[in-house]
Image 1 (cartoon, rainbow, N blue to C red):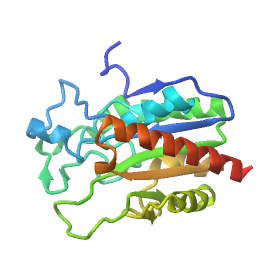
Image 2 (cartoon, helix red, strand yellow; image 1 turned 45 degrees about the horizontal axis):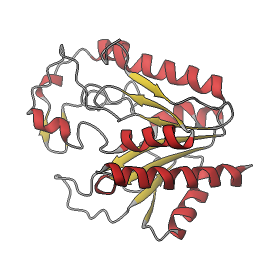
Image 3 (cartoon, one colour; image 1 turned 30 degrees about the vertical axis):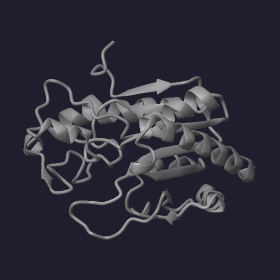
Image 4 (cartoon, helix red, strand yellow; image 1 turned 90 degrees about the vertical axis):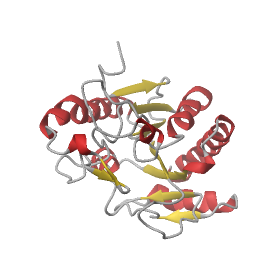
Length: 241
């Protein structure tokens, strides 16, 4: 089976009633039959994937028993962390870069090929596991080309209506001396699609975590953050009992 057969992969052995992670922007893969019309170097940029998160989630699965559901297609093909009717579901521009191949794209075809199978599989996976806590792992660039607003946070927690787990995690990360964002640099009130659908809609506690990309750019840094996230997640799960 090739990477283009499924828009997701699952790593680790999930523990019923345990902790799991979901990584919507884990990959920069673009299928050969989709032409985005951009410089190939941009596939290594933050507009194509959340840099470092696949490494963090993979280490958590292997070392800490936190199984992961990861995307295998770039957010430039279709953003799996958007609602089906979101105007940026298939982006035609990202952080000042035009994505000409997406202009006039067959959005319905990409929904059927990538978005719907990804979320159907995630729903079935979570229903089978019934996790006590879901980690939604993302990373953010230290600075946007199209905005000069400073981004001082090292890690951040996003949430919409349910902040039960986030409140504990914000405190725990702060106690480690980190600069922690509370619904920064994005607000979960506007950008929380996957957790709205698979966590809040079912009353499942979750942590939507954003890590600054320069802090998880190397394998050593990813290992450090995997250990830290696993520790915080386990402590949050205990606090929620």
